[in-house]
Every structure is written in structure tokens, then in C-alpha cells.
Length: 278
Image (cartoon, rainbow, N blue to C red; front, side, top):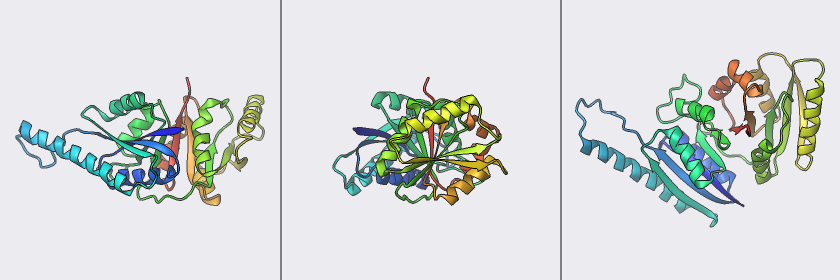
């Protein structure tokens, strides 16, 4: 199986961290990596009069930077089954990502938490938030700034068991296979007992995961969900936090808390957001 992975870049250190992480995550796999830059003109020098030549030169410089990144990763590539392509567009970032996913049958988008202009006081950068909220065509893996790759041994998957999971779990299982990771299902006990529906979904989830290293961890509902998850990450040395993003779900409750934003700001490990299947 050849993986088709999209790597948006704004040439920031954070986007370079995401590229490096992805190359190591898929070090032994057959992959085509698509380095994408959605260019837009930024008047960084506060010029009052901008010529078309100046704008064209700015765009050409961005194209050269994108080519330079491709040359850099190709020069350091060890796996002959790794191929690299570039995608350059002047359309809005979200539109460009969606069109690229469709055109190249992308399996995964990997990006940094923030871009070149990401202010420290904000959680995810605005581009990352838009992509998580709007791009539902494939999973998105968000890499913290400065994060160094470590082999995936433990993956946390929080759920409230209010939904039946089926093929939506496939992206999680695919990542699990890369390094024979263990999936730790996390349930935060909001009530003393599970409902009949929750018990059924738990049984089906166990059946779906039976061929993979996995377990279910139960945690009391003390404190915020953000803190419970952060403590869980530290307790079990979790390497990736994975959630399914659908309406009226655990992840939506997080958005309301808003724990996703808090986790985004305090992110210490990669965060895999899986879209619901419709």
C-alpha cells in the first residue's frame, strides 16, 4: 500500500517540524509526500504602493522556497520508496487542501500547530483551526512546535461510548500498524454505570480492536477533561492523542469546554483528528 500524505508548509519552523516528524513516522513505508504552499501576498514592508512586478517577484520567491524544501528532503531521503511532489496555489488554504486531497487521493494531512505568524497567546494558529473545522475529507495529524519524533508505542483514544465505531477507526488502525502501537481507549466516567447503548458500543469497539494491541482505561470525572487527558498522557507516556470529529460527540463537548483549544495551546504530543464517515 502506498500512502499519499499532504504536508502544508508556510516555510515556518513549525511546518518543518511537522515534515520531519512525518518522514520519520513513515520511514519504512512506500509514500508519496505532497509539499503544499498556498501563497498569498503579504505586504510585510508596509509599502503604500505595490507594483505587479513586486508581487510577481514575491510569488516566485515562494515557489523557489517550496522547491528548496523538496530538494532538501529528497537529498536526505533514505527510503527509495519515498517520492516527493510540490503543490503551489494562489487559492485560499482550505480550498487548496480540499482540492489537493481529491486530486491526489490523500490519506493524511500533517501540519504544525501554528504557522510563521502564530502568536504564543493563541492555541492553534488560525489556519490550523480552520483546517480542523472545515476539512473533513481525510484525517489531520497536528504536530506541536519543536516536537521530536519518538516511535509510537502508546496511542490514546478518548470516547464516551455514545457512538458505534466502524470504518472510521481505519485511519487509527493504519497508524497503529506503523510501529505496532497499543491503543489505549480512555473513558471518563461521568455516571456510575454505562447505558445499554454505551455497553453495546463498548462491546463492538472491543471486537473491532481485537486483532490490535489495545485496552480500555477508565478514569473518574475529577477536574476538567483537559486535565484528565493531560494526566493520562503523562501516566502512560502516550505518543499520539486520537479523536473522531463528529457532531454531538465527545470531541464536540471538548470544543464547548473548550478543551480542544486548551489541549491545542498545551499540546505536548501529536494530535490525530479523524473525520466522521457520512
